[in-house]
Image (tube, rainbow over all chains, first blue to last red):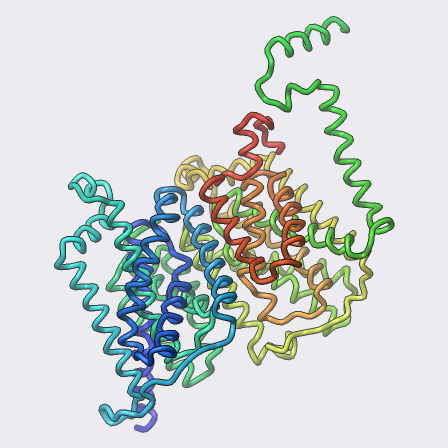
Length: 289
Length: 339
């Protein structure tokens, strides 16, 4: 019985960590869906969001949820600028171009952050006290992060379902030509969705200094985890990314608990390879590329 | 006979060939084509006897980057499959040498040879599943593989062989000259292999895969086996280069060996700058960037990689085809598969 309770507790903890993966992977998937660009620099957007949150905390003592109001707009406009200046020029070119462009961006952002923010790991503690929930103790910050991530995820779904721009984004990702024929300005949609994708990564990043430790290279680990997530969920599928993020968070937590954290890390990479071995187009992949 | 050649040159001058290189008299061209490589080879062969240890080491590094940029080009440049996990192949080669010399006391020559074979076998085995993944999925899988290897080599149960996260140190027993000549031969071998592949039926088949994989299949090319052959060849050459590089580093730690930002990025930048799918391109890129980065390194240690990233972006945006095809487009160099 105690074993089972342990298992459930760690599954729940994993679910909460998974919410952060889900947010990030949704951004990655959104960008891919609209412009068929795999944003290899997505992890660096997360890292920047993390630094925004960290500096907001250390200068104004605003908590990470409040700093989302800064991190998300900052990353949104940063993403729009990146899209406008660089990505827009390679949309429609062979994927090699966009992959290498984002790769170059990612290197610049990591190395630039090392110069600007120093390579020291950063972090702060926030709401560390335990809260009793369903008979288990969870740290308060975990619950808050989980709840906020859920709110952001559902806000995104609502935005895509109900608003004019959201519908335009879905239209462009479903069929680019027909969307254009319907009078949708595909360029604006691409800018908007890249901005939203970056803002989602920024939101996920805002929680990094609380849950993990923040350093310029932190994006690297997260981008690979979100690759595993989107490969399982299907590139371009937002609900797939959301569910797979939660799922892989749970799996990671359980493996860390029962075996080791190294093995948990390896599971992510093995997941990517095994899924691609079985289904070269992703597990629930709708897009064959 | 005399008249014939006379009239031939007359006609050639009358037609005024548009390509700059072909305006040069054919005798001069022939002499240059034969003498330049020989002079270059001779200069490189006597370098350790005339130059300082610093120059020899720098040239050794140029050879290493030529070999890696060229191997990256061999697979990714010709098939269009972006190999973001290249550092994994370099690492496997390096670790094979390090383990064989450090733990089993092997001589460096068989150890480096084994590095090539082991990396090729590794490339073959992972290529079977991974090469089924198309385009972006392949790139993602390779990134995952490289990261997985880093974790794998630092895990506790590998520690008896790899030293885990602490790393493995060894004495290669190679003199600087031996390293220099060995790496020079690997760089030469890699370039020759690319030359042979580029001018073969196999090379054309790879290019067809790059342009349109479906069309290639329809034409009866077994794309999976061709890709696998190219990938294994790339892994073999990378293994040799990585194995010799280990003898230069002498101490391998997963955290510094499996750095995507370094051993994957730099060959990509060099090969892309020179021109993917060309023979001379990666060589030009490697020579140029090693020298430039050596000059920059001393002054801006922190900005070094930023510059590499920026150069990659600039190339992709403004000169995506690379310098050799760029010169061909401007009719300075002839369009031939020999370049």
